[in-house]
Image 1 (tube, rainbow, N blue to C red):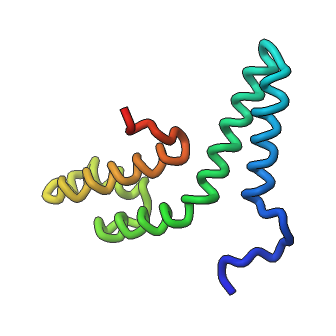
Image 2: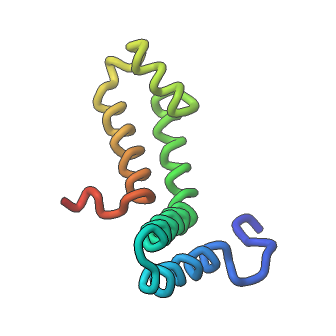
Length: 116
């Protein structure tokens, strides 16, 4: 059955969450200076991993559909098509696809960025 892990609990998501919470609650609160900074950075990275685990598959499906509608197979091909002017007549579609791509990346890397 697709989507079912061959590994027992705890899941990858649960493991990443546990380490992130440990860093946030124990290390950051007791550390100072450089160690505190690096613990916060590590916790933020783990938060990104959590969000990518949760959102990544659906985001990839949506991105692939956008690229297919535009007749390209990757973001690099999309960039090349834009540079070459092959999509000039489809500007609204291109802008919408690029905005969705950027929004998906921000949802993982910097959630809430678009709230302001």
